[in-house]
Amino acid sequence: SPLYPYGMLITTDGGRSWSVPPTDRPTRWESVDCDSFACGYLLAESRFGIMHDGEIDTQVFDDIAFGASTWIDICCVDAQTVYALRASGDLFFTRQGGRLWEHRAKLALPTGFVPQGMEAHGRHLWVFGSPGHLMLYSDDGGMHWEMQPTGQSMPLQAVHFESPERGWAAGAMGTILS
Figure: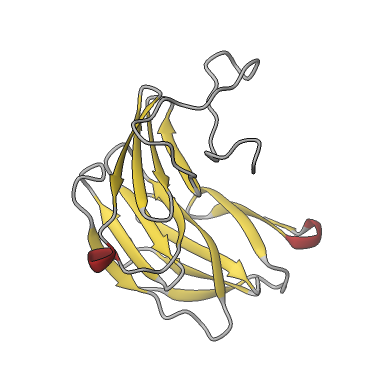
């Protein structure tokens, strides 16, 4: 938003006050996932950020290696293991805290399906979006994918899994799935 152009605020006092984290280059972050307060990962149009102890270090993505499609989401499994998804269905992966990325898979997105986000729990990954009648699921770190029906068609906008068997989804018009 114009009020908070960087797309991310941090708090160190339980939410009483908020500030923009210090960074070497101001960036409009599109997606953020934190393993802890001390470690987080951020995505922007052409940048990747690593947050350590409240400070952000940014890197420019090489569009030749990563493609020019829009970044959708980033999910960290732990401080070193991170997945990043592009709108094109290209899934990238690092086990080295973002120092070296590899192209993991090109998801076969169903016709008309627009990914809105991704969730990761260990080697289990879910890609959700619009329409919300299905999610794409992988139990092997993104190497193989299957479609899972959700039983409804409203677009899904957020998903969280506390284990591979237990999760929640929120979507359009107050949709909540368990």
